[in-house]
Image (tube, rainbow over all chains, first blue to last red):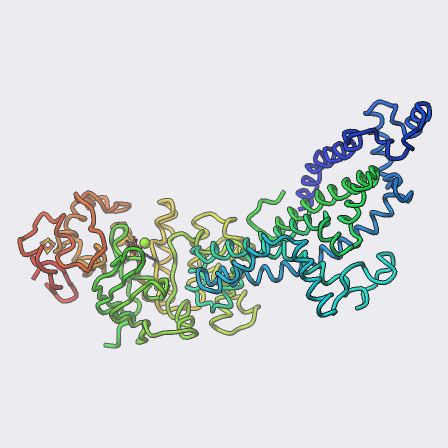
Length: 317
Length: 320
Ligand SMILES: Nc1ncnc2c1ncn2[C@@H]1O[C@H](COP(=O)(O)OP(=O)(O)O)[C@@H](O)[C@H]1O
Ligand code: SF4
Ligand SMILES: [Mg+2]
């Protein structure tokens, strides 16, 4: 097992390298000079050259990349042009917020998705199946910012039960797990959960239908198991794939949904990314994308490892 | 004489779907306790369907079952819910042709056996696992303690079939249904499994219905043999009677084609033609299109079952 994990880790290195190169080049591919947004438009040519030297933009790309990687590995992602604060700090706060939102949304989506998926798979082609499939198709096809707005209209504006925006008193900096703060999390999490719900439901439905059609299910009945006993076998057979799908969904959601976080002004990475883009804040953009991409790579690795541990058929080592 | 262990009267099984399949048509058979009945027939003749009916394993919504099926005095066709589950694996259990498909790939062997024991005997986990270990020892799986934790894909074909047998016998059933249990195995392993089955059957005193398309195997394990063709039993009797003096033209054809000294491993073929489609209730002798001895009357009505001697039956006009 350890060997397997190390091996997988090793295979991840080239991917991580590729990601870092892309993130690095982002600044240089982006139209315009990386300095234009910092300098006043009428800066003299001499000043520009000096700044370039200070930022190191006059050195060969390879050297710039090497220095950048070194700094990044030490946790220094540069300074946000817009706020003047270190990118790493901004990111840490935003990541925490997005993590909360994404984990909660994934959990809600996974539980509901499994419920719909199992019902649909067990009662295939019945009206229950059609209902569950309908709900999950709505889930994957409805525009989420629109759903978010509808929920805000119903639960914030009309009923006044839940707040529409923000992360509670004191902003994101002093989060606490109490009702005053958690109620801010509910609407965005429910809105976001619709994505994994639909995908998990469809995956689980197909899985369950496939498992039920296999001979070993007849085998379980033949040895006298009751329906609950057979259900355990279905669940254990479906679990590795369902959990893998859940993990990947969590990965997507960790990227933070720019739209959902913007609708709810939830101070997560999506929100941050949106800000970075609109303000042409390149260091912030670069740092955010790098960290999110690395997160995704790591999560893929984790999903692989967990799936391998759960499924005895996958060759370990 | 006490009631037979298995008593099937005029069994009809039909599958509804885009096309109706008349898989079993008027099958009657008996099995005494401790006896072995071989069901011999080519692929598609309805052997598996007949066996599965004894455990009611056919898809309920599409299957129409007629006739009467009694096992150990119990009417199987009227069983339901928990009583049916108690019957399955408790009174009668089944060995499938391919244990790789019939065992759950993500549960280890020990769990799969213990689970059945716990379900039927209501014992605790430790007792279930102890029985699993005992069963693996009895089917002579080497280092059984280690094998308890093995998953089906980690075992060889022969070991898997032994594990399947251990599972089937774990709750001491009175009736063992073996559906071509050696077809998927190499010849040498086949013989070992047959010997093991015969030995365990004596040891446990079970009745056994052994389905095969291999005459050699049928002769090897059975006391009596029933020959199936197109969903009907065309002939049945003791192994000895059937081999020495086959009465039905289909049985004669099989033996002529396969019994030239070498018995083992012979397959059923070499009779020109193919079995009929099963899309209607037979209105004539279903073997008529291939029968070398056919009479004019054979196309007109279904031949009745004749009893040429005690313990024998033949569905052919010539046998009456
Ligand atoms: N679940 C099912 N649905 C529809 N047809 C079936 C089903 N099971 C078996 N059959 C059909 O019944 C006939 C007999 O099948 P089977 O008993 O499996 O034959 P075999 O003698 O090879 O075991 C075949 O024509 C098969 O296609
Ligand atoms: S009934 Fe007629 S056709 Fe059928 S097996 Fe006998 S002789 Fe042949
Ligand atoms: Mg079969």
